[in-house]
Length: 282
Ligand SMILES: NC(=O)c1ccc[n+]([C@@H]2O[C@H](COP(=O)([O-])OP(=O)(O)OC[C@H]3O[C@@H](n4cnc5c(N)ncnc54)[C@H](OP(=O)(O)O)[C@@H]3O)[C@@H](O)[C@H]2O)c1
Image (cartoon, rainbow, N blue to C red):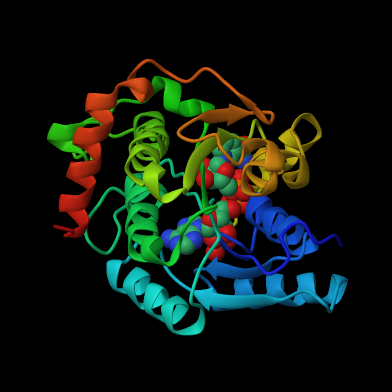
């Protein structure tokens, strides 16, 4: 335990599994109080108990939220607002990938709906609790490089496949990073994103059926651990060397090359306005 983040409040989404849980552990070990956003009460409580059993001095709060449901996100934001007067760090880490086409409660294609729109609404709902020195970290992926924003068919009713859908959602994470960074720069808030690399987590495993477990298990020896994969997000959330850097895409704790589209300011602005309309922000 050190006190780099003493008196800081951090929010981590997808906090019960993989890199999210590793991020909670690391931020809490630096002295932060951490709000754990989890969608399942059972998995959330298990993660909370495990983290507290490792170190009882941790200050953690579990708050449930389904990022595929606008009401749930608004309810989450209201609870946070009543329990905390400020937030210093948001790590938008939760992620979903699926071979078949699924939809969120509002009828959005589920990877786009959770990976981008859920986090967009969450962040915009809590932005006024952040101020000078605040940091937002969006966990994207190298998969954004093959992504395209399908403005005319954002929910991929035509031509859905897992690569098209996942890469669109991860390009969305980078575009959101760039445009939000520009919009909150004069408030002293930084916004960066990262690619964690290939990491052995529960991503792609169906939580109900366990489908995907065998493949993930076989790949485990070749992949990074969640702790290794979470390093860049943790670095962006806490390291003093990046306190003035904003709007960038990182890999292995260094600014990295992202796709041409992800650097297009007009596209980023158009997509931000498009996202606002989808969640009903005027
Ligand atoms: N693993 C990799 O190789 C890799 C590579 C590049 C990028 N990434 C990105 O890294 C991030 C972390 O993923 P991970 O690999 O650590 O995966 P993971 O172990 O599957 O964790 C994903 C987390 O997101 C949560 N989540 C999923 N749907 C949600 C929803 N509707 N509402 C709230 N939370 C939800 C999950 O909750 P449940 O456990 O309850 O489902 C879980 O806590 C993701 O954004 C992913 O796209 C991963």
